Length: 237
Image 1 (cartoon, one colour):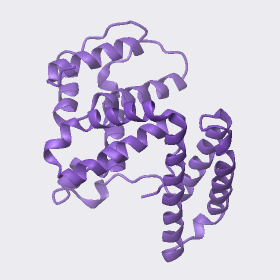
Image 2 (cartoon, helix red, strand yellow; image 1 turned 135 degrees about the horizontal axis):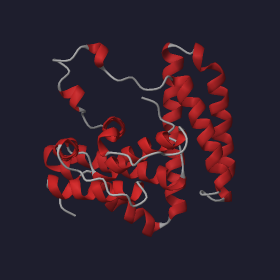
Image 3 (spheres, helix red, strand yellow; image 1 turned 120 degrees about the horizontal axis):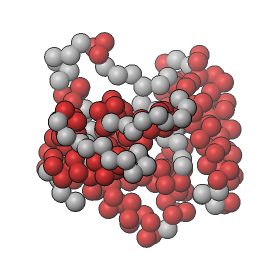
Image 4 (cartoon, one colour; image 1 turned 135 degrees about the vertical axis):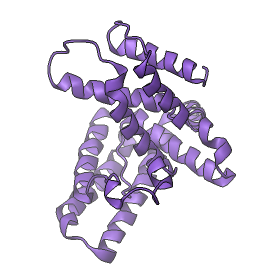
């Protein structure tokens, strides 16, 4: 797969065609400029695909689709997913790099701790029902879900050191769940996900210190493991 903007745009065009049920919408003119900026900014193709998916999911929730989607409409979602991906991997975002030139009010804020806990509990329950982690993990999932329910009940009033202890506990739960998920996947699947994680980060490797690159690869691998088995991210930043 090529990495030049023209090759990148061709991959995006093919993916958009599949999402549009085979209806081809050419990525040319202003649309080509939009997608070319994704390529130049280092948006990995899987991340761009995920942003396109997010737009389509929202579009379908509105009712019956009336016309094929143009790629321009997906730009904000692709950028949002790219920002989330970079934060999850500990990569500096363009907003952070230009922080001296941008007002603080322009920074994007994530969900609140109570909202994060509520979403985590729902997704963790779904993961248990799906059985993706195997029956041996049910006890661990139940224990973590119960702890999250307890934390959710009190999180609105948690401040200072108590809040930090809760955040630290979430990180411990997160590591425990990912370890269980990796074991459930097996060695072959783990190796394939590691290769996929490194491919996502290929465009950033030359600009990163070796230790930072390895940490980012590990974080990318954890994210892919979560996606494979439908786990939430329990850690809260």
